[in-house]
Image (cartoon, rainbow, N blue to C red; front, side, top):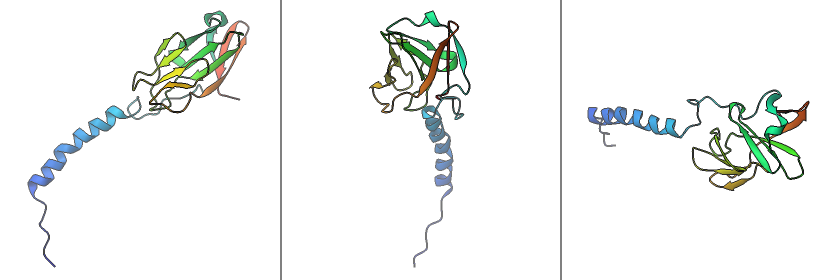
Length: 142
């Protein structure tokens, strides 16, 4: 059996130099928070604000809580997590009733939670929501 050539110093140094570059690429594509998962939904009911802040046939984005609340034409409230189902990025833009993810451009309907533009393929996570004493309260689905 022929002897295998030993690894040269040059090969080892090339590998060591490439490792940090590969690591940067992985970090750039990972979920926000330096690999720390972002809470996709509130873990307890959250008072989001006055009920009249969400107009009929409209929506309001609550960035601080990663929640969007919409109201259909009949006045029914719906709430969804605004953590993108594609790569876990918090969605920070609402145009009308369309949510736009800043990471890869996925778009979601804030009234139904459905994907309206890829790369996401899964709808947003629904949350329970109610109006109580003129306030909107959203939280984990019951």
